[in-house]
Length: 158
Figure 1: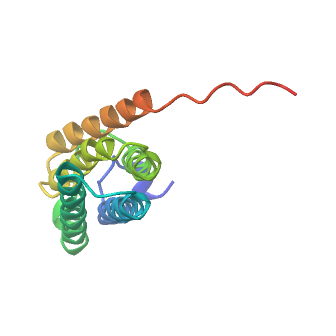
Figure 2: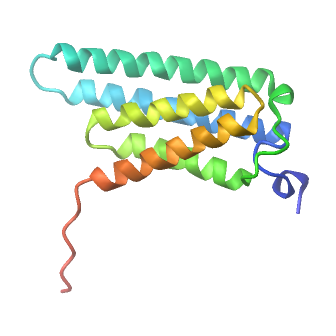
Figure 3: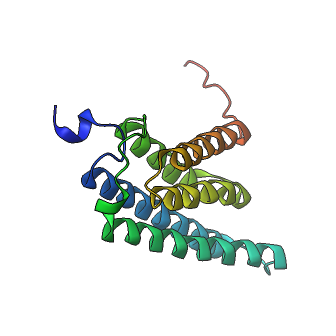
């Protein structure tokens, strides 16, 4: 086992940088999702639709800035007492990126993005408690998105 897998999540510079990588990937998914929704939209946008798209693009920028901050100051943000394995942190942020790509209603993206921003901000504190709260928020939001997703009909055997 290497040192990064033995410690809890965010317990090394490499682990903080891995979180920054995942947050950047989430920002990429936010951007792609908003652009796809704009391109696929028919007719004029409502004020609410415009406001949501602008807010998500603003959140994308903020998430990128926070990820860049984590890259720049990774050694400062190492958390020794997180109590969650790094694999959990990375899997949860990867699930969030995938949900952003797959969500059918753009409004569902907003809550997930808020959780990612909370995680990015919490990671910058170097304190375990706010990070754990942010991880729980993302996990809860992923579950909510899963619950609200349209169910596919069962496949009938041939």
